[in-house]
Amino acid sequence: MDTTADDTPTTSGGEGWSEDMELAPAHPREAGPTEPDDDAQGERLQKVLARAGVGSRRVCEDMIDQGRISVDGQVVRVQGKRVDPDTVVIAVDGRRIDIRNDKVTYAMNKPFGVITSMSDDRGRPSVGDMMGDLATGLVHVGRLDQDTEGLLLLTTDGELAHRLAHPSYEVKKTYLAQVSGSVSRDVTRRLRKGVELEDGPVVVDSFQVVDTHAGQSVVEVVLHEGRKHVVRRLLDEVGLPVNRLTRTAIGPIELARMRSGTIRKLTRTEVGALHELVGL
Image (tube, rainbow, N blue to C red; front, side, top):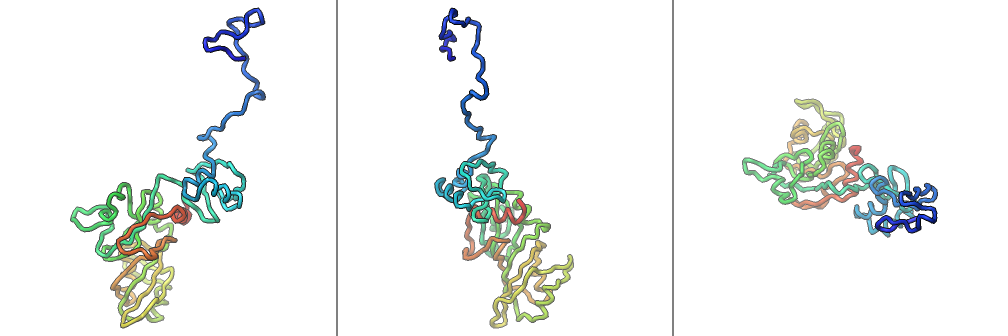
């Protein structure tokens, strides 16, 4: 039974109430429904998906009904499921997506002559200069030599950068190299078997000749090594001095048709693929 704002009982003392008596708390079974604690229960799945850019909440609800969404490997078909976006792994049509909002990753087509550094005290052009106002908090994932062009990743996610660059995760990088001369079958066999360099052996993950013309050849080299100048040293060792070198892919991320000097933000699906690649 309610009391008024000044705590005066709504019934008189003669009706069984005295001024110092209190209402007994409601029995748990008689208590009304309570709202769930969002912090304790997490966020609704369709809300998390919508914020990640998968689609509107209505579209995301339809995708859940269609069985296209999985959480931690389990397909979700029930609306209203709550998840912790900081800990769960969410996939759409079997492809993991990044649902965090506090990290960003960019792809750059680094031009020839630009150094892989966020700044340079000698005044040389750097990738930090190219990123401009976007550079705050970014780290580059590994390095490209000053005279090597192509795909470079930059991110505010330090753990992702560490894992992508660390040799223990064996992230494959793909390069196109323009070399002098033609490529014999013996060279191909040597590269696939392994070549001894001054700092240890190198084995390519794959090697193929893309084109040969006018005394020049274009070859594709895939390897997970990250040693300094390793592609140039490797090809030089087998008699194929490199005239031009371009990195075209890091794991699932490809340079594709990005023009030299351009920058783009990776999609959530692309970032999710990188996380999956290195076990995040």
